[in-house]
Amino acid sequence: MKLRNPIIVAGLCAGALLLGACGAVNTGTAKAGSAASASSTGGIPKPASCSDATPYVAVALPNLTNPYYVAMKKGFEDAGQANKLKVEVQIANDDSANQLAQVQGMLQKKPCALALNAVKSEPGAAIVKAANDAGVPVFTVNVGIDETSLKSQGASIVQYLGADNAAGGKQVAEQLLKDAGADAKLTVGLVTAPDETPAVTRDKGFESGIASDANAKVVATVDGKVKPDVSLKATTEMLAGNPDINVIFASTGPAAYGALQALGSNSKVKVYGFCAADQPLTAQYPACVAQEPEVYGTKVIEQIRGWLNGTTPQAQVLESLKLFTVGQTPGAGEVG
Image (cartoon, rainbow, N blue to C red; front, side, top):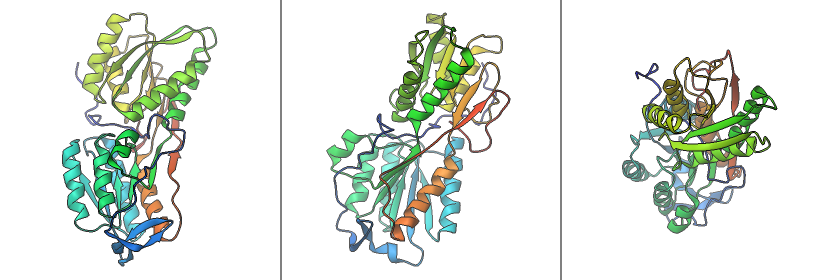
């Protein structure tokens, strides 16, 4: 089946920390390396380059095929100019090894800080370790670094900033229960990405949200791999094996889009989840929640500037998600 919207492509329209996204983030235990100057700001060793007239900030993002990261890149670059920071953004094309090499290259330029949206949670720990060894503080965004990997590397981050994914999943569940009514039997299938901590956190939030309704249960979970075409196929197979499913929870924007493509306009199955870019909300797609990645990029830069000005960064900054319902369409940069 042909995809109607070509701009929704592979990539995680997501933000998250680890599985305990609503709790405190474990930033690790390592201390910044010898490349930092003796001074510190907010208790964080500060590289000598932070004293430059326009401090250099390295930014590592996964891809630009996903509208999510296009918006985030703009946020970083615009905020860099506004906050008198020199921002360089490197794009890894969804390759963790490539991202590590790119960051190692930027570390040679002695940045004041690294803003990292890792391609994957576990490999991201090696990138954090490389920055620690260079004495460069790491501010993570959207995709949290796997806690076990962080500890095994002896690495640490300064801050995580991203969506409150557990709350977002619960928000969708509450809207579903409100729409369905008290007596409705809800047989749910999840189209998710089980190896992505943001998606898992969203799933858990959603499941906790429907737990109050004895008539609601999850009967199947499939891996859409954060790709519309894969989600389309996975949804089709899930429905074939579970014909009683009447609700799909899509934990990423590409999963929502793929699920809708699999259903077709005549299906009575409804899709709830995290917003697909530019996809109107309809009777079949009644509600979704969206992040604002451009805002995330902006806020990370503002956190770095605040730190340089003497503010101690919070270990974790969780952003609420915006709810869309029937008749509305997420705007530019408002994606799941």
